[in-house]
Amino acid sequence: MATIKSQSNVLRYDIVGSRRFSNYCFAVIVAIGASGFLLAGISSFLKINLLPFPDALQLEFVPQGLALSFYGVAGTLLELYLLYVIAIDYGSGYNEFDRNSNKVTIFRRGRSKSNNLEFTYKIADVQAVRVEIRNGLSPKRALYLRVKGKGDLPLSEVGQPISLTVLEDRAAEIAKFLVVPLEGL
Image (cartoon, rainbow, N blue to C red; front, side, top):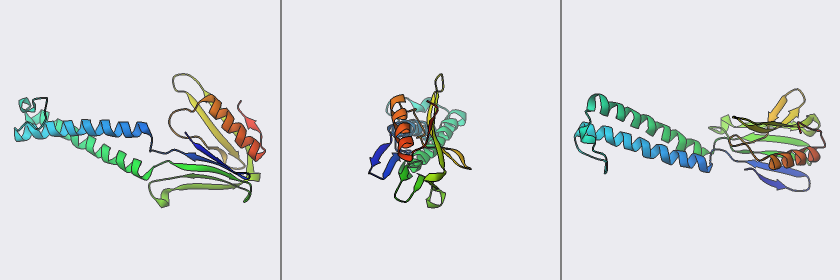
């Protein structure tokens, strides 16, 4: 969930990126599974049981051990990618509305400094704050900033939908701060 930093003329929402509890849990699960597959494949090749509970010596290396080794290597590569994404905190950033400089800044962290996204607009170019709420099997609760000539720019975090009250309060606060209409409610 985004944190709010509000001063008299600056409103800022920090956006959580890939350093979420769910990503840490998924990384641990992938690491355990990948190491189990890899150890089972190596055990079938070396004919030495490297796992404490299953008996991998009953597996033939071709094709069973080879397939398990492939899944173990693929899982390890996925694990390394997850750790990289968590380490750089991909997708994190902020939405800053600054009356002092008369600017709106939307920043998201990318894979490197050259891939970071930063959009800066004049407050006068902001036409509205729009809320999109869709319920059902794939619910969507998103907040957008309508900018002249640019369309709707997303302000919400990627991941779990935020609660309706938080979404409504945030949208109302931004619209009031920027003195623009609030659409979608």
